[in-house]
Length: 412
Image (cartoon, rainbow, N blue to C red; front, top):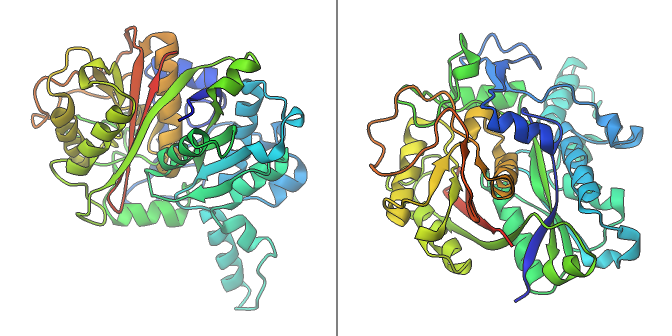
């Protein structure tokens, strides 16, 4: 099969509106959490989130693109434009059917949905829906508008697997290139879930932190006193390219995408398997595909969202696969970015790739007392970044419904 490499990166997320700012803040242990400013959250148990700051869509989007798109699609276009620029691809010199878009979105146009329904109700049930209601709402519009913006006519669709979504998209793009179905893909994911309905729904489930008095320390994976995740928003984009194609054009190559796998827990709607059986199998299969022994992995960016059950389940899975590996270290960067749902895997894949390039591991912040249920021997990087040469990095993303997804990157 053909080899696949990463030649472009782009992002907009609570830690930064470009790759370098994002990276600098991640290795500086910066929290992005604050009281919600997007709407009045005072009636909810959870009143905090990790919001994108100083977003100016006009930097990369024209007026019509902004008018016709929900925020999740705007985030997608913004990050995808960055990634394509970073890749140095000359699209006009390629066959447009050789370039595809596979994009991940978990919820879609929540803001659009809320606004349109509110307008309908306030209009005394007179049908006043916008003609852009459905196009702005549906999850596949992000991939569609990326393809339209750049004239990309290859394979194009959106994956949905809850918080495993971005990794699912990356994995699909990886496999299509390996099979020779395309030479290049723009992939990743976006989400804009900081809305009343989304925050209200997760708050009602008691899934999110209520540390409203101290937002900066609310996201605290592995800490004994963690009480739920903090919602985030944004997007991450990667340009995946067939290795020989990238090599021929002299592209800058960040890393090779060496392995990817998915499994299902088949256990519970929202809770992971307590022993992490499905998660462990996904990691094992990805290692097998990447032709790596567990002892050869250098870094694992965990899914760990800061929920009491989820963090331990994943670490149980990690222990099954890696035991007490002296080479491998782990961290959860959601402690800084919050949980971006369908976009989480994309921005965490970017951090895994940057860790290989820079020789620095971003930390898990806000850890005061490690949970006593954590299996012994797992090396968790807490509070401060670690300088460490690594040649391989793994990134996990799991989702409601029992979806487990894992991707592995290698230094070339």
